[in-house]
Length: 488
Image (cartoon, rainbow, N blue to C red; front, side, top):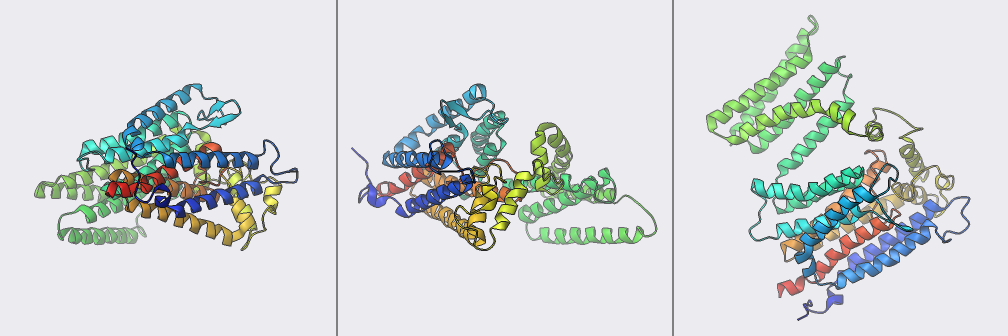
């Protein structure tokens, strides 16, 4: 018997989201027209042109999207493991048979068509996470449950990294954001944030503090670890006494630094070892509390402090030996450590010039001079947002970002009204992926984050990304449309 929601499928579809989707792909197409237009362009819709090809991808994407809407959502709930397994197999095959395109083996070439399986792997992984969370009595509490979640996400990440496609691999980490709604520990977010601070700090402050590399590294890392460990103790410490110990620790640290500052006027000494001594005292204090109260959490905090020390001093090896040279340069440029306006930093510098030249209201459609003179490479793909800035100005760019924000909030609202955990988790996965793409793409165009090749959803040129985002959204809209049947 056919399972239809009450009132019919057409009445149950969230047409507001459909309308927002259509507006995004339409204005995205206009931006591709603007990015493709230059003094050599005679017709925007000439055979083989990017605006015409994008129009073709849009039409096929709409057909596929509404075909997805017509499918029974049981297919996704039951078939999620099969979809995930098939996509992982395709990622493995891609490593072997994909040609080398700009240093990456992530594209399957089928005649005139190129497809990137990583874009569709996001959909399969989101469905698999929703399927796992929807299993009977599954709760994100035990070590086993965390291992399953990490395994599902990190497996495609590993396969995509083997394809030399770092940007696409990083997107999968956004899926962890969706799991916080289901009880995922905030400790992992704190650990990720602290790791990012250690990594950035090791690169920025090297050779800048108190004149020596070892001193600078050691002074920075000891104080950073003390701060993060203190935050962990404030959150997970026992009772009210933790505030007393934190107060004593903070006042003691400030007192020691003040006394050392006075002594430094008469005797020179190594500040780094003062910070190291305070860190050792902090670790010993945690171990004392662990023995006194028989609490494993204090031992874990002490191990966090020691592990942080090891992580910090491994940054140099990872940066120099594991990351590719072009990735190293992009990170240093984004952090302001290096300036390479004629090399790896050229794209970002020109994109900022293009956005700035748009002023308050922009130069108008097809009137962007930076675009016409081809100053910004990859402007139709990764740097499409600078076209928006140049042609629409600050007002148009702000309105686009606000519209994206409203679109993501709409998805979150739909996720909250789902009657199954499968639908809710998948909805949050969709919103997390869109949010990550938006934040990273706009950030790299503005020079706030390294350039890692993240497309702007529905705006960047390309059939794979457009279809991937369309599948991601329309599967969720299909799940939402049938929620009334679940309730019945």
